[in-house]
Image 1: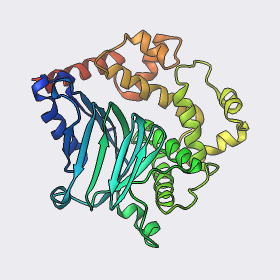
Image 2: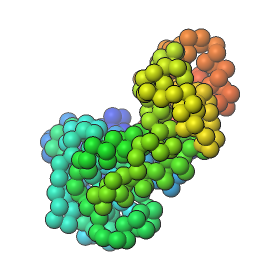
Image 3: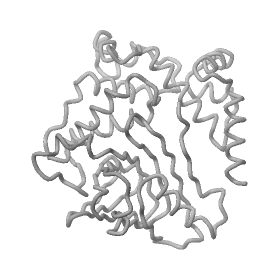
Image 4: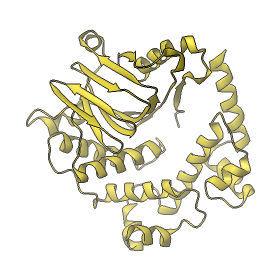
Amino acid sequence: MEAAQIWDTADRPHADRFGYWHDALCQAFVPLVPQLTHSAGTFSGRVERRVVGDLDLAVLGSSGQRVAHGPRQVASTEGEHFFVNLQLLGTCESEQDGSRSVTSPGLAAVVDTTRPYHLAQEEEWRTLSFKVPRERLEEQLASRPPALARALRSPSTADVLRTLMTALWDCDPDSPAVPGLTDAFCASVAAAMLDAQPPPPSSRDARRALVLRHVQARVGDPGLSVASVCRDLGFSPRTLHAAFDGSGESFARAVRRVRLERAARLLAHPRTLTVTRVAGAVGFVDTSAFSRAYRRERGETPSQTQARARTAREQRTQ
């Protein structure tokens, strides 16, 4: 599994932070020109990027900023993509082709990298951003021009996109569930951009995404089970198990994978918890059982993950 890329200004001198942030944005996304909305001396920002299928995913956030993807940046951009930006914290004003909207937490907007756009986040913010190859949506969008830089406010649209984007971000890139989730996501984005009804969340892939999102939200509960999930979501056990048909993993396997993926991120975090606390945080009551399961799944012990992450951080600061 490809490791996530992380750019964080926290380890940089204050004078270098904004320059580092500019370079990080351009490496993780497309050519962009950021502009501060507050003093550079107080600026902070972080980007975590990973690749899932043919999508580039990132969680990013910073102090207030404005960003321009102008004509010069468009000309130097490789490939043609859409960005689907789901707001997690703060607000973002998007502008493209004369359309302008403000997205608040829980809402998403789309911009096209082949034309200029502007984003403004005046205060602290955080966004889940998906870079989608244009060809993934071209067939669905061939009928008429899509809506750009407009908040996707329909309750059904917002719910489906939030569910699928969260599930894909938390998904192991090597999971057999990835193709179905990415296809469902791209179909939902195209439908939302055309103001059409997105695929209903009752489809198998979307239902599985709902289950995975529920599991991710309750990953620390050692009592997480078929019975508890069915009770919370109003599914029958048969419906829950059917949601995983064809995905290459069972519900139990998915729960174990989600627990251990979360554990890997906790172990690699700069403010590392002890192995015992990480085990408890992901729903294991027995630290030894957690360590055995982690080693079988990840190919190394929890302590080895901590040491490897520590070495990588030290190398980045040298």
